[in-house]
Image (cartoon, rainbow, N blue to C red):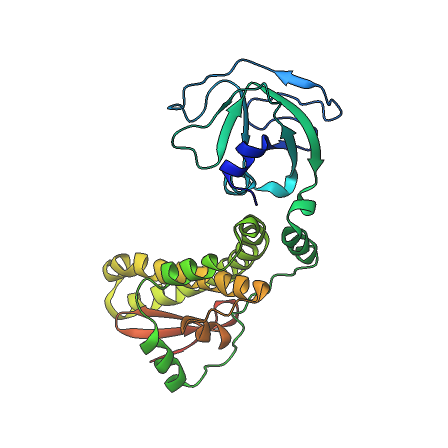
Length: 274
C-alpha cells in the first residue's frame, strides 16, 4: 500500500463509499460514472486535520477507519493545477480542491486476503468448546491453573489480535469472536452462577454470596473471552499458545469460589471441585 507521501507525489488518493456512491460522512452522493473534474473550495490550513475540500486518504487509513466489506473504494486522480493540503498531524488523510474519478475498486480486488476470509466465513459454524460431561483428572487441571496468571483476558487478547491482519479483524470479530463468545456465554453463565451461589449460601449464607458474586461473573466472563480468542486462533491458523487454552481443550470452565476450584462442563454442568 502506498504511503501518504507517495500518493501526494503521484497526485492520487482513495475514498471509501457506500455501494451506491454515498459518502458515509456527509451523505454526498458521487456519480460513479462521471469522469469529469469535480471542484470545490479548499481550506489550506495544515493545522486543521479535517477542513473544506475533497478529502482523500491512503488505503491504510481507510482500513483503520472503517469496516470495509460493505463499502467500495474509489480511486481519484488530482490534476496538476489542483492544490493539495496535507495536515501537519495527518495519519494518512489529505485534501484537495480538484479531483477526477479514476477507478472504482471492489474491496476484494485490493485486499485478496479479506475476500478469502469472507468466503470462508460464509460456511463457518461456531462451536461451543465447553463440552466435558465428566470431571477431567484433577492433577491435570491443577497443573494448568498453576500456569495461568491474572489478567489472562488482556494477555491473550493482545497476542491473538496482534497476529490478525488489520483488514481482517472486523470480519473475524463479527462472525468468529462474537458468535463463539455469545454461544458459550448463553450456555454456561446462568448454570455456573447458580451452582456457585447455592454452594456459597449453603456454607455461609447470602451475605457472603453477595460479596463473591462479582468475582464469579468476572471469571466466567474472562473464560468466555478466552473461548472466543481460541476460536479466532483456530480460524486464522495462528501459532500463538497460552496455558489457558488447555482448559478449553479439556472442555471445561474453572471458577474459584472461596479457595475452591469449581469445575463446570457442557451446558454449565457442575463436574466437581478441588
